[in-house]
Image 1 (cartoon, one colour):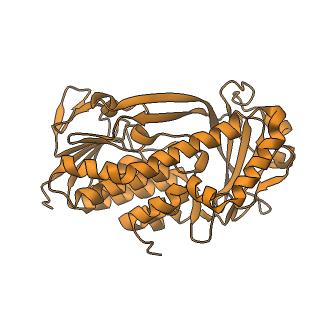
Image 2: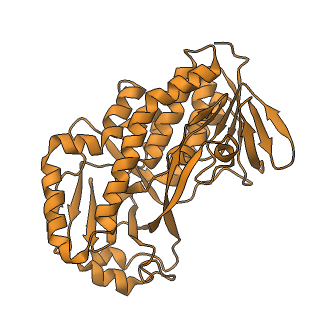
Image 3: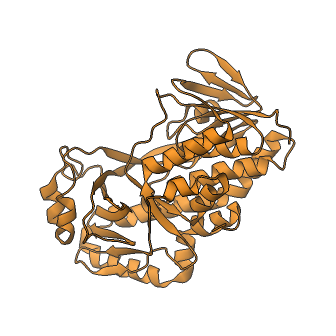
Length: 381
């Protein structure tokens, strides 16, 4: 394809950086717009499954992204009674899982984008886009391109202006994410998750010196989302891991989970990716992974098409099934983990235990790590 093709990308997060880098590596000139004064990422830890790891390999960001990460051999789940109800949640011998700091991943993607020649404009606030290939800025300027991509988050102005909205829903639950000092006796090589009613705690090693802890609860659980962090409330709910909870800092940000559904990801020469298209609760550790795969795949599919609008339609048809399925199972996981009636807690434990015994069910729930990885291509490590 001609190197004169030009793309304008809105959003300097994980999805935006991935699609910008992949396009540039396929010969596009790419300009990325970040509304902040600098590229930055908030959050604590993140799960990188097989599908995302293959993307990182392809764009040359793998080594930087996982340099300090922890390979995870198992993801274990415990119920209110401290009983293990999953010993190897969504894991198999062929599927890699590495946990890293979110900031380390973001920096690795930013470095890959700069190496690929992506032009990054900060303090550039996007107000929308047109199907004809114009990115609209809040300053009143319009940037013409062969392709415009909205990777501008849950409340995407690009999605709205392209007429792709269907449903943007607050799921009425969320979590706080924490990094705490890691001790020699802390968990290593595995992720732990504990359930008690609608509350969930996850404990995951992310660097040699830090452990990532997520504390999830319904929005109506005021003690669970209180500021400063309510150590007593969470410690009483999860006594077996109170030695982790006691290390959580007083000030943490509670973030609501959202779910985005769209009529399409594409209108003309405009497209959306990441949370703008596939926002989901991070219950399966796949929200960012799916976003990265879809961004990478957009560039790969467009490289096979002279007609950009037709290429975008082919890209959506190729990727949509895996993304929709992952969103569906993330919603189901949230309902079981957060909204299950407390008097039926033992029934929930039995249900989750039985689901874990079914290889076909596990494969369906984690379709993104398997089918999504296949869409990226064979692993190179």
